[in-house]
Length: 208
Image (cartoon, rainbow, N blue to C red; front, side, top):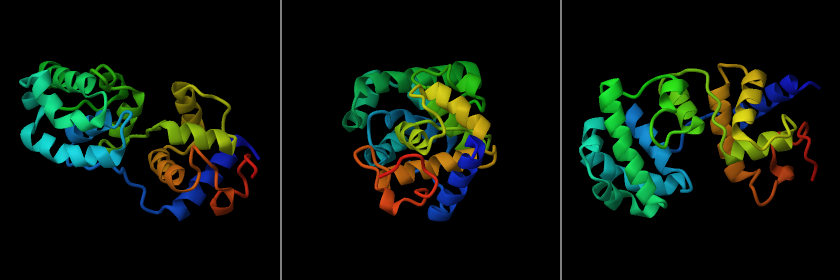
């Protein structure tokens, strides 16, 4: 079986197991998803979803963030971890959006990763979920599970992103990554791969 065939099997198995491939972060517009994903670094999505309602009520657009102080934003996100760095990023991100993008979130990876605190993972998530472009979101679950499947033997997220771009159908890649997260939380965890419960055990390269 080629790696592309293996990838297609994984796509179909996960699609059957997790038909609703949705992002677990709560948002209503591109800026909110961008910010929520930045806050989710080294923090659970559940915790981010507890913090963002008050944050987004106070800061409704890029201009609001641009005009805020670091300390003011920090008060809203203290429980997210690394809040001082994140609060600075959110203010500077707001300033850059206002100055360079008319207050709007850009729709290309090249422009998104220019924003303070925004890396390829966040940029891909925004591109896929908001702008419906082919995207590969490589987080810890994706790295771990695609490696266990035998799709690669890499640890570098950027290298894995490009490998998966070649292996996954463009119209399936974004949903595949959402499903990988769900599977990584429920079955193929970092602590233990529960192969007896796995929908991909028949073709996965990792054996119990």
